[in-house]
Length: 64
Ligand SMILES: [Zn+2]
Image 1 (cartoon, rainbow, N blue to C red):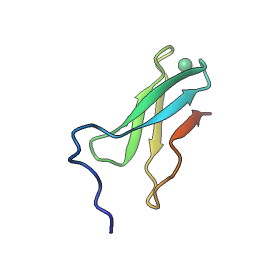
Image 2: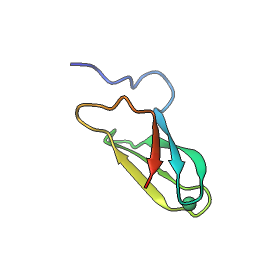
Image 3: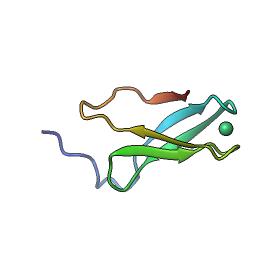
Image 4: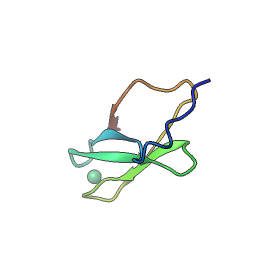
C-alpha cells in the first residue's frame, strides 16, 4: 500500500484545460483527498475530477 504524500508542504494539483474558455488552470485536491476541484477562471464553471482508486498517470486533463 502506498502512503499518500501529504506531508510535503504543498497541495497536490493537476493541470486542466478548460475547453469552455480555452484556458489552462489548475485543480487542487480537496481536503478529503477524493477529488481535484477547481473553477474556470473566466466563467467560474466548477470542475471536479475524482481521484480514482487505481490512480491515474494522467497529469493534464481536458474539461469536456
Ligand atoms: Zn470557462
